[in-house]
Length: 260
Image 1 (cartoon, rainbow, N blue to C red):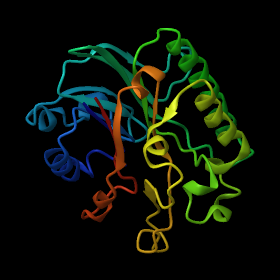
Image 2 (cartoon, rainbow, N blue to C red):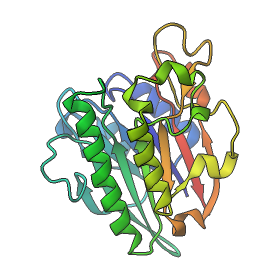
Image 3 (cartoon, helix red, strand yellow):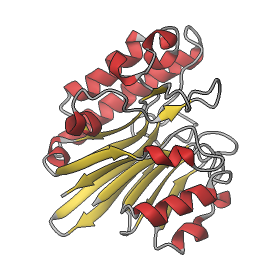
């Protein structure tokens, strides 16, 4: 079972790219972020024609998350549980049946938080606290789940080509990194690091500016975190780097996790 996550940076602008990648990669479940459209404007038919079920949690112009799946989604939840006052479309979750049980999958678009020292950064930290509380509650169910998406967090200096350039950015602040680490300390597994260890150069985002892609000046901010039960099923995990070479690409590329 292949579960992917990808910040498409506008589904309308990236529709042909997304369809081409789905045809080539053939994932079973895809978590999308930054749709930048409301639910009724999402191009569901194009994905349904490829055999995918579609559930969305959209928002006009900003944010928006979706899950595409070859299996019928069950128990769909829109919005991060326990964070009911949040009016932004940043979380969607669904359950999928498997021959040997089920797997819960969430698509997450965590707040950017810039500039530091403003309400935007405080909102980011509050959102991460809610996610921590919910992940802790999910762990008590002792079931396989994958929390996948754009976390807007660079976990360690190893996850940036030039860490010093990010010292004042919300993505690399001690508070942001500590909260990401707290998720791992609950018992969650960072799929990419579990498979690839401390290998350098594993990036998922390259800015459009200053030739970042050409110089491989990237960062790793798109993550798939696995519960212990999902980690036991982990077969492989990788970054689809070549997607960044598409015409008019997203500034992010897909991350794929394969479960046994």
